[in-house]
Image 1 (cartoon, rainbow, N blue to C red):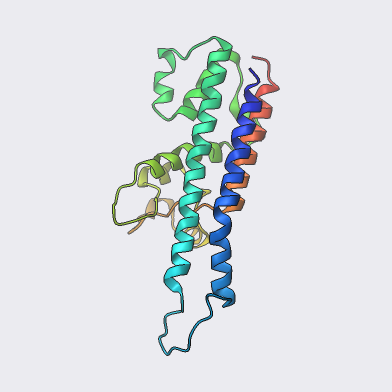
Image 2 (tube, rainbow, N blue to C red):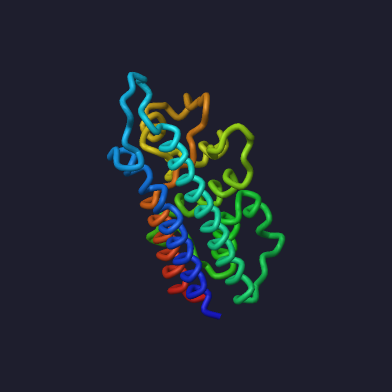
Length: 217
């Protein structure tokens, strides 16, 4: 089986899913900001911007689509490793249990090093981003509050991720201003997905798969 081909098919599907699913919400936000029909604001002395709830709903919808795609992306990457494990005929055994307890990406990092002397740190890829995909998926799949549509990194996540990739500029600035030992949040940073960030993650998975398969198993 050409494992990388099928991974590529999944990555391409996820990218087009975001593009097509996000398009109407991106356009709605653009029309509201440009004050185009049907979002031409009526005269009002209310200081609140017109169509604010519609804009927020569109932005929230974009984030739901983005987080769904991140979840699919992480699952596809995990399937890639599991499929290679079957293809190679060397199943993960108990010696890797402790590594897998720290996440499946760390588990397969130990597995490929132990079985094939392939060291992930030798790749040119952003391993922190690849590991973050699994953490983000876990947070997306296990929300903690029925009152909040957003997904947030946990305090434990932030200990592993000194600079998370999937956060917005405002949270990144706040994070940069805090000393590591002083990071206490009333509300931990939201998992924020844009088309550019999603494409970057898809590209990094593709680069990593290409690098991995250039090594002899």
